[in-house]
Length: 395
Image (cartoon, rainbow, N blue to C red; front, side, top):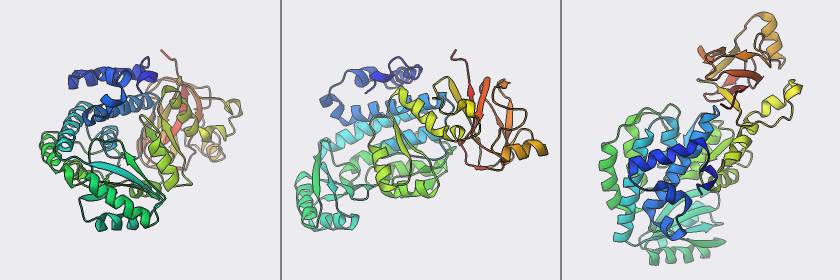
């Protein structure tokens, strides 16, 4: 899963992870077979690192999130993306988490199964009626719930779920009963690692798995991550929260496209896409620059963006005011034209002022040529929303 990124500048993230972890992360991403990657510790390290490779690639073109969330292990990637968790600390925590969960799974053998076509209440009732050690582990999407526990209890709950109308139950190839009480030994071990880690207040809100609520204080996250090991992942509920916050598009970063599929199932009207390989970054830029294609800048209509394009994003939420607020310029901007003085083709240096949002200056971190504007005067922006796009020298 790492091979598409091998020659990308963001591959340096893999080299940094190898130094921090003392493990051959590149081999895990390039050459490891399924049996080796099924081991919990290896799977978690490889997935976390590749997610951060993709995040680095997206950030290199000027894209930043306005809100973050991650499914199970992905919560650590979300915290790194929000600035709440340093990358090196994330690697160390993921290593400890993976090893602890692996040991807990060896101590108490467990398994998981996906229940399809039944509502949450029916699956919960099936687990209770099984009268064993089986619980709901993931609320993934409408009609998709994962259960976990001892093999015999999962088998019993699966049969009861089918009797209650489940269309299908699919056993999962996993090493343990994650997000259940069987992970209690791992929780005790992880709690120590979390207490030794410095967390920062997230720069963007992060929706937590445990309660599907946003948390923006550093002090909250150690207990949330500890509780996550033995609590169900409320992903469907988290997606609903993201939709209610106006998160658009929903972008999955890392290997696979399962989460974007769950997002489309949970929020049918939302745009959801996955960035799995370098060319997907171009597609993401094209989606975010859709406003530019619809603007009167006909010279750029339909042009495909490449990684030689950089987006300048809003550093805060608020009403956008272009750099030139004279009456003629404001009127032109409100008619969908770029602000006066910063027309398409204008050369700008690093630090050039593009405008203000909520009293905060918007300055470009790139030097290049203004290609177009994605925000209009008077438009209300959220933090991380693209304001303009520039053509820059690849070097």
